[in-house]
Length: 339
Figure (cartoon, rainbow, N blue to C red):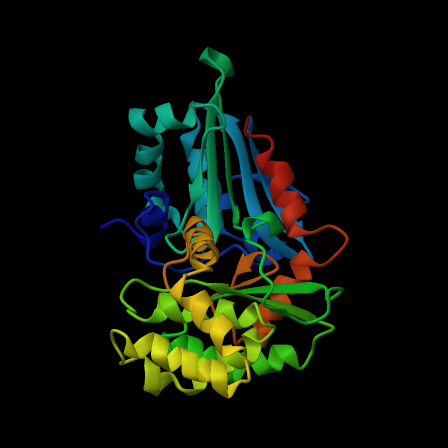
């Protein structure tokens, strides 16, 4: 049976983050997979192959390999170092690298580039370039950092515009876990508006029958400057409206608008005409492109969080995304080598 690391390479892994990325370079350098390489700083050499650790704020955020086409062993060792694999995975991964179909994809312009995990937390870039004796592999495994442009604009934002940390929360009003985040975690971010800027994005799930209309209703409220209190009401009255069906759903949403002193005629017209259907769909589609599969999903400075309530994880992400040299800059520069 193939190990987790090899499944990662075959894009069949469960939604878990890689084990060795985020480690210190000192810890990574002790990986037995690199035992046959000569170390100089964060670069490891064996023959014509090199493995380089990209390090930001004392943490490995990417592993880059450059090796002759025939040295699939060096490439496999580099990737397994990033993914937390071991020597037992080498044979299977080398066999995968030798598959004609994979090599054909790796020879395409820009090479092969996609998420290495199903949850989109890590990325893989792989390219086979050149011919004959000059043919060589370049491979890169790194944390997957989304640029600001990957997130659609929304007016539903809290926190100072100058806050150094951006949180993008993809949420579903009919999701009980989103309700939990709203009630227990969001207040901690809102208490520190100089540190966190929070953007709410809609990601209504297909199997939540009232979620899409709830998202539209919240946007109708936002058009009157009341997104946050209206969203509060939706989560507070969660058990009231989620089991409703048919015409009872918009009727309930209209009642919340009246209770919050919104213009009822404008709100009702907005909801009936689905004035913000395109807005909700745009945010939903953007989430799908980001690899979002469930809610709530939280990105901190473009990095998908595995535990959005963890101060330790938040501190780790902030350390590599807010300095003079950020992980996004390093990863983007490295990916530019895949042409």
